[in-house]
Image (cartoon, rainbow, N blue to C red; front, side, top):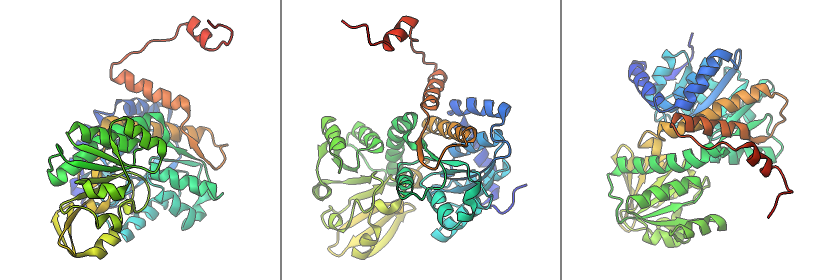
Length: 418
């Protein structure tokens, strides 16, 4: 029996179910995990609080955990990422859900607290807002928590900071850092969905545009690759020498943001840091510049400074705000500076989320089976990473060689040389 849930419109449930089933077609690895979970019930008697993007792909993860015996309470990890029809459908599936697209900050945190009211033994987070709330305002719940998982680069950074201060109270697996997550979800998923979100919002022609990408991590690599494929000229800004060097070797122009601000047509932030684009950059940008963010939080773009500099603001489309500066230049901010791939589109394709969410499900199972782990941020166990990769290859009908006994022996020996 579902109680104390808040969604925009329960009547949207049928549409949500249809879309969830459609996404499920592209998630064969998670289906295989779900099949085993149904039989083994690894989460029988376990309560979970999940703060995730409430999308069709997330719904398939939630149903997999439910099939494994879990009682789940779901809330949104970003006010603009919720798909209201999916949230409504979750109630039909018997999963408590508190998520509304466009929720204000007060509502957003009320929903997080409602998710925590389940008194979870496992936390599932996307950005660490749930864990942060649990460690501050809901600390009385911490003794019952076995462990948790974190899906994003930003969230992992926050959790490592918490652990570094000696304040993390339970073990958390950094799902974001799994090879089968960042190599595919971050690179191919973020790359495609960011271009999709900006295109849907603006209908801009990419060919010939100068696209400035702030941050050349796996997400930045993916966006650069896809934007170049659309015919754009790529400029990368970085603070890490190795990342900048790699981008240069890929043929991209590298420069500080103050130089990039002068030449850019489209700006995309994916750093996980704060105020990557700020007042001094707005002062240099061409009129008509488009600014978007694909990092988890909207702090990458210094929106307060943009508001302060502007003499007028007008909403042109549901996800485009036009800011007119004192000298008459106009700058265009997409999706209120939030994740543009979810604010203006549908997020990552289900096929890449298949691997990320399989990692989530198997990592949660690992935590239940290994309750002796001490509070720390842990990597995804290598055997889980390999299992997810092997299952994905099988689903794609792709086969690889198997080492012979002689080859295995050779790899394990130091004696055989030239």
